[in-house]
Length: 151
Image (cartoon, rainbow, N blue to C red; front, side, top):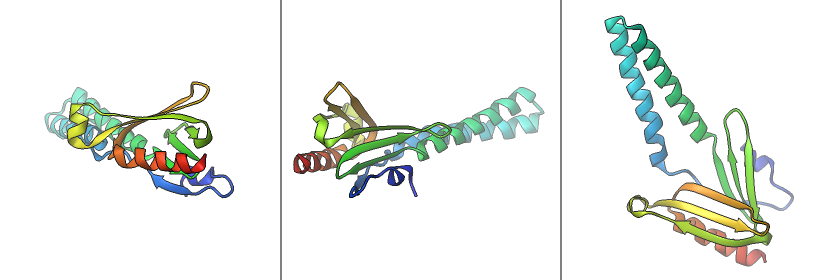
């Protein structure tokens, strides 16, 4: 059971889960592979520095991957929730009854890869920024439809 499912209130259901785009996993993968190459090469050449650097990159790549896998984002019938953190937990939410603006931002590269950023603003200057959203138009439409129906 996910953390978001655990914090739902009575009569609240998850309408959509917002996954991270698949390109976010490239950097942890590169770190892991480069670390593995360093580690193997240093092991063959008996280099202490290479072993330490390789091992460090492998650990860092695994850590980055686990951080990405521990991120949860969902749209419920009452709010938009984001949970981040591997060793610590940070939960941010915007309730639809206080939602003021829902914006999508994409630069040229993001437009090519069909990813973007969704920024939600609520009364009281609270903001929720959902970065690296795959197919942001789909989710911004879902958020707007639910927000209009809940008011």
